[in-house]
Amino acid sequence: MLRGQSLAGGPLLIVIGEALLVLCSLSYLVWWTITFRPSGRTPGGGGPFLAGAVLGGVGGLALLAVAIAALLPRASWLALGATVVGGVLVGALLVHVTSSVAHRQLTTELPLIIVWTTMQLAAGVTLRTAGVLAAPAASAWILATAVATLVGLACYLVFYRLAPAPAYWVGMVPLALDGVVAAVLAVIVTVARAPSL
Image 1 (cartoon, rainbow, N blue to C red):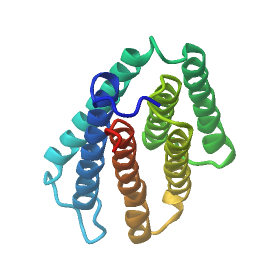
Image 2 (cartoon, rainbow, N blue to C red):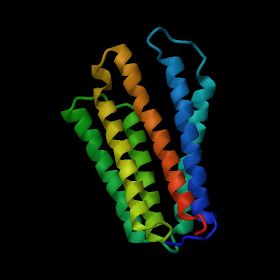
Image 3 (tube, rainbow, N blue to C red):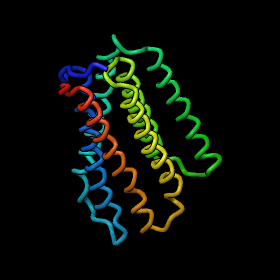
């Protein structure tokens, strides 16, 4: 691992991208609480927060993509390609299984889960194969991403089977967890680039 080097270039872009994803989660969470509160909707009150979620999400994912491209000269094209293709294939399978087998109406949350997971795994694989993260840190990265993804999928599957009040709270769980995981991933990169004592 390239420990002791400054936080710059691709790793810095990933940290900023993860920070934007934290902002996305927080904004989305506030919008959700305002818009879907079981006691009644608050018309128009959540617009700025939804805009913040969209801008934070798009900006964060874009920075992750730029960071991955910046690290590619040292990272493994094969590992990255396998991760992206795997994400597309697993995503298509999830769309089919959840809609045809589990009879869950397809909504935007599932594509968001797939894109978020694929980008996070691609960033983790790139950081590992570029020598930025050691194996334990990369494993923690993948584990945190997997936990957030599985929780998000579970909440996605049960959401429409719940009464309004439980559904309201279940819908908030993946939003909060994704923000926490993005913050953890930013810390992992920052610590990996911290100077050795």
